[in-house]
Length: 114
Length: 113
Image (cartoon, rainbow over all chains, first blue to last red; front, side, top):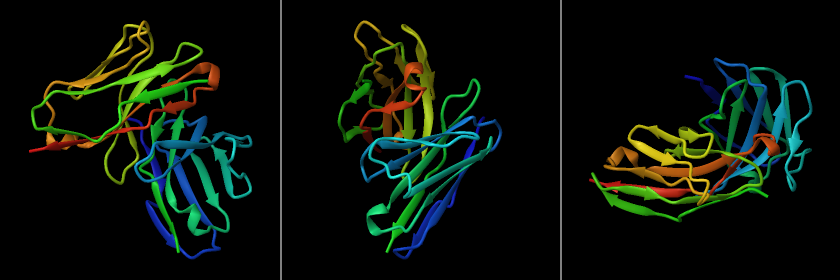
C-alpha cells in the first residue's frame, strides 16, 4: 500500500537552532501534504496545508515565519522549525494525499528543544 | 463548522471483550468518515473509512457504519486482543473544506491479557 516516510523520527537540539523535517510519499504523487502538531495525549492540530508548487496555507495562529514549509515536488515536503525554542517541542506528523488517495500519515517526528 | 466528538478514554478491557467507541459528527456538507489508529510513538494509520450514508467500513475485525440520521460512526470490534491497545481517532473530511481532516479528541484503549 501507499507509504509516507517522515525523517528524522526523533531530534534533540539546542534552543535557537533550526530543524528540518522531511516528508516523502514513496509510491504515489502527493499533490497535497499536511503538517500536524500533536501535544501529549491530545489530538492532532492541523498547522498548514501545502500543495505542490505553491505556497503553504497556514491555519489561524500558526506563525508562517516560524514554521517554514516547502513542497517543491510531488514526493517531498519539508517543515523547518526556525530558531526553535523549548515551547516548540512536540510531536510533528505529516500526511500526504493524491489522486484517489486518502490521507496517509508519516510516523511522526519527536522534537525536543533543550 | 465541522466537528467530531468521540468518547473520552481511557477504555480498559480484558482480552476477547467487545469494544465500542462512540463517535458523532457535525458537518455542513456530505463528509467522508474515517477511523485512524495510533500506536505508541508512531503516526496514524487508516483503519477504515466510509464515504456515504449506510456504508460500512471494516478492517482487521473492526467495523463502523456511516449513520446519517444519527450523525454517527461508532467503531466496534467483537473480540479485542492485547495488540489492539492504541489510541483511536475518529475523523471526517469534507470536500467543501478542501478535504482537510477534522479529528476527534482520540480514545485510548488498553487491552489487558
